[in-house]
Amino acid sequence: MEVCYQLPVLPLDRPVPQHVLSRRGAISFSSSSALFGCPNPRQLSPRRGAISYDSSDQTALYIRMLANSEIEVSVSARNVRRLLSFQRYLRSSRFFRGITVPNSSNILDDDYNGQAKCMLEKVGNWNFDIFLFDRLTNGNSLVSLTFHLFNLHGLIEHFQLDTMKLRRFLVMVQEDYHSQNPYHNAVHAADVTQAMHCYLKEPKLSESLTPWDVLLSLIAAATHDLDHPGVNQPFLIKTNHYLATLYKNTSVLENHHWRSAVGLLRESGLFAHMSLENRQLMESQIGDLILATDISQQNEYLSMFRSHLDRGDLCLENANHRHFILQMALKCADICNPCRTWELSKQWSEKVTEEFFHQGDIEKKYHLGVSPLCDRQTETIANIQIGFMTYLVEPLFGEWARFSNTRLSQTMLGHLGLNKASWKGVQREQSGSADDVDPTFEEMDSDILPQEPRLS
Ligand SMILES: [Zn+2]
Image 1 (cartoon, helix red, strand yellow):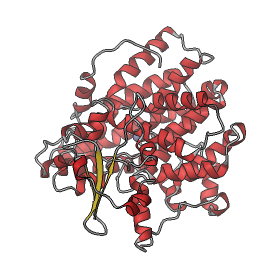
Image 2 (cartoon, helix red, strand yellow):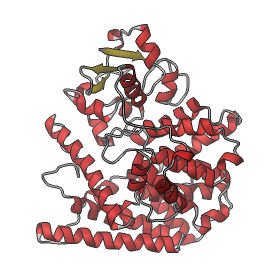
Image 3 (cartoon, rainbow, N blue to C red):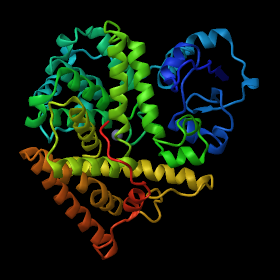
Image 4 (tube, rainbow, N blue to C red):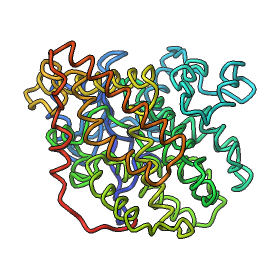
């Protein structure tokens, strides 16, 4: 079965979110299964203009891009699938084929079992175990946690949100993460959202943030990696993926996460009762937050942050300054894994390395050139983690602690130091030397051209 959908004419000056396209008759984007299921990843995107599914068996689904001339689709199939994102299409197709998927996303507050409920009472603790919470909620950690936080922060009441629409929105968000990704899945999104909540509670922030700021922060955290394909930007660029072309090889993934989030916001109608002006402002500001998570832009944000701290001119009564701090907070939340306890941090390290190596395996198989950090023959978890901590995490959290010198910041730096020492111990056992620091992250940073400081 091969089904294709034509992309409509884009009426906006910016690329339209895939989910918005799906409302108009186009279906959305590639996935990691798409990338890895195709006989040759280079064949994924030779042309633009349509995306197709090919299901040669019940488990292997992949997407290929075809020329418009090849597009033929039955009306009935289109009727069913046009409204669905790729992730939801997978689920619905299983449903229509009578395959029961043991997954419940219709969890309600009353359905939490005792332990999950107990955990939510401590949702602001830095040692919150998101893996355990995900198991206790039957894989619904992102929905359960984010709904709880909306309630806890009084956002439902303040913005007069329809709880059914909110839940529907969160379920769509959770389902559009790829559960087959070892790292970039809904549990990572839930973990980042929980970390963001911890930062929002920090005195400097909680004293000055408005409900609007909190709302944007939680939505951005929950959606910041939406529909992540499980491969990085260089992979998308070298395989000529349509997203790389669409976003001109710049913050390709982050732009896609943002557009996907906007699509779901519009589709859910969660803020349909707000003015168009406010909804547009919300979409734009969520974009600023999500785009800040592009790790290749770290130097730019960090130098801006450092300059402000040196000058002591951050004024959180100023909305632009608050917004900048929320960008920094989301950046911290996104890469806070090494600042968690060793038990949690180690699991994240293993998961992200598994995803890197999976990409490397594909690159080797199709002679695409193995990306840095992705070669399982030459890299180790310890080397990757030590480089990551040295060049990215330590500088960022060092500045964050200057801004917010609290017990939480000290706790995070404490874990960071201990975890680095643990990985150095592992490295020593493996190589007999503890002085190897993978320079890849430093090289990545040095690729970034200096840019004028700006508040965005
Ligand atoms: Zn992330």
